[in-house]
Image (cartoon, helix red, strand yellow):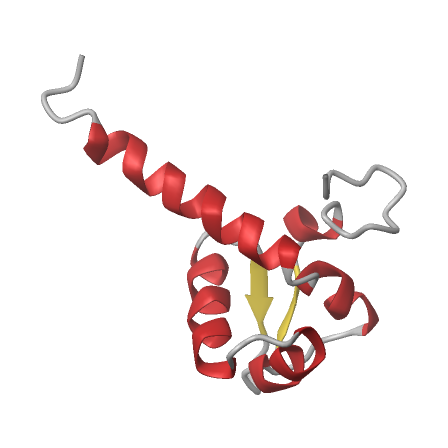
Length: 92
């Protein structure tokens, strides 16, 4: 057993909660029509724009979303399957 098990477990818990939050806000569904800024997404889902920006940047770091050169976000292959209308959806 590692000397500090939480050092290995805690990052996974944070990532899982961040993914859950993005799905609850329907971010994969909102990005299905194309890239959007964090402000556009926040307006569409009722989130606080600066906080949503931080969430999206964190999820981009683990390749859950992609960021375009102009700062907008789009789905990655990992988040495409989190859309509710995807034929093999895992959103639940």
